[in-house]
Length: 448
Ligand code: UDX
Image 1 (cartoon, protein in one colour):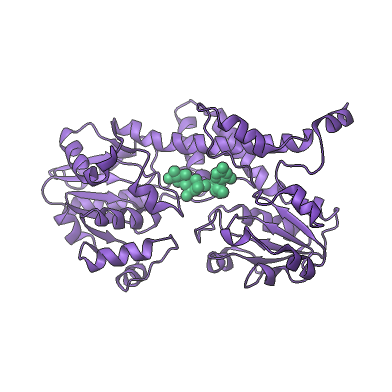
Image 2 (cartoon, protein in one colour):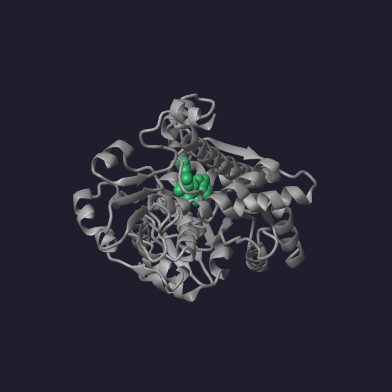
């Protein structure tokens, strides 16, 4: 089958390369000529484990190519994916759909024969109807069916998620489009792919509902962590204790500095805007957004606490800048808010990230200094702050750290280390929802 994939961001590039790997012929299209030139030379503009090898293999096999113009690929394709960005619109938080509609117009102008146009980008409910209207306006006689097919892959695990998804959701009421989509995804179905067909609007909403629910789960455990700190309980045990209940599930209950990334913040905001517009405000999701925003700023207080309130003029060594490990993505990363807060408090900030340094230099204030590794940034710093749980930070040599830090202070915002062990090593240790040496009784007594 011939596929045209418009947009070579995370979703477009990964989906395109994976479809090619399953034997389809895929052309990935992007208006950014620089990006296309890079891809043609076999260089990948983003960091995603395994993607370089996957792209190279499929290019060599002649199943994957790149273009700045969509005309040829769209003419030949049975399915055309729109995987362009849908950033938050400045001012009102609605998803900005201008790239989606521009792509729809271009597709309509050149499509030949029956063509399924698939929105892969995360788009608000009803966008499929709008895309259809734009296409009809551009070329009323075009034989095009508009389908919603949201993508659930996670950055850092994108290839695995695409190839072995929990489910594939396809929103269409058109039987012809349905059989094209079934054929497209058939190679994934050896082990009983849960391919789920729904109405188009339902499919669009599933994506937002899923992300909002996951954001809510994280925010819930983050608030539990705050409560744990006050009553002397351990949030990791609470997460395990509730997560073993199948109805709750163990995943996405890892307390931390607040969620970030290219999806959760943007999608939760867009969902609440849609809901407000139709007079059904989603109060839970609105609260999740507010709680998470406040958390990302407030979490910097942990550094203040660990340093006994004395932060002005002191140096924080930040380990991890990306919103999560195995990506170079800094979008809405908690590190951004934390670093701004520390600089505002008069601290000096030195930072290191295994893959995010280039991006960090673009988005962080000029006052931030950079190091070449965890021990380099720790040299003469007053405290070490782990913001992202990269593997490279999971087995640090604390004897070495102790020798180079000005004082042995570790703020572990991802709960990588064990409080009692850190205390034994002589560190002042702050983590999330796991107080050291405090029993519930003691704290409750004190509160009475
Ligand atoms: C998310 C969804 O998981 C994915 O299905 C959707 O398609 C896009 O958005 P992604 O943004 O790549 O994927 O990252 P994810 O792994 O979900 O993490 C999002 C944020 O939540 C990160 O900042 C992460 O650190 C945080 N998180 C996640 C927690 O703080 N605790 C958890 O238990 C899980």
